Image 1 (cartoon, rainbow, N blue to C red):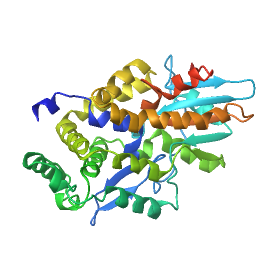
Image 2: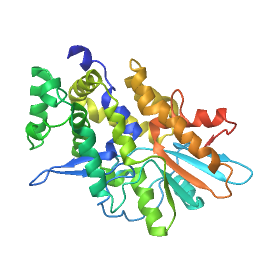
Image 3: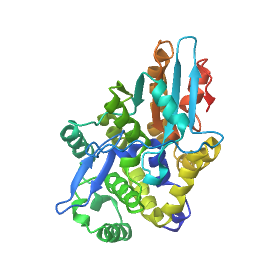
Image 4: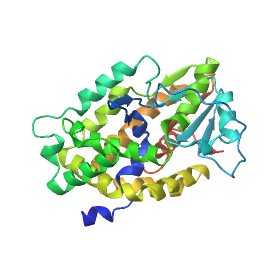
Length: 324
């Protein structure tokens, strides 16, 4: 575990940058209930009250592409935030107001809860020999049980599932314990506003596609992912605050430095979670750049930094973005 401990900024930050954590939140209740919501966020949350915009910094984690016929905005999202993160900067609200259509990663709005929950169960159920007790060694399993007990839950509720399910669940719990929830995620904020205003919402992928990403992880990758998550939970507050700081100041280089460390030794995972999805999304975005309607596209911040990011792929196709 020593080697894992020193790999700071590994498992947890890239899940935040991708937005996949807001696809899974386990709510501890009298009978623990799994509440599913891939982006924009938890569907059962009440809409947030509109607030006055905050003061601007020099740049935001927001870009625009102007074409002869329209404007397309690309906003990097942090999917778990707190009330102090609001109101959002005025330039973000202005982009939303200007856009005729909002684009998010996946649809888990009201009415999809049962379907998405079923997809999660299907994705997390292991093949023979791939359950939590089969994969984790005694030391890691004991640490996992301790962490879960601290949350008032039992490790037995995770035993029927693959290890990634535990790792993602613990990460969501840790964020919530620090006061960051999907309720205040950037996606949720604009999703609620679009619904209230009758603004059309489009989606880049389905909840099923997002859960399928974890199914592509090998058992060895799931084991390492879980070990890293357990090792880093005590360090997570500082790590997450650093991510939020880079987002608030529009610091793309620092965001890349924080979030991409986890992929340095795992090019296969980078292809699964980033490169392949980015290319697919760009193929969807290109026709919108020839439209006469304006779009606001909100995706996890990690999709806008590093190799094969959405902004660079669009630039290679002839569409340079300007940071706002």
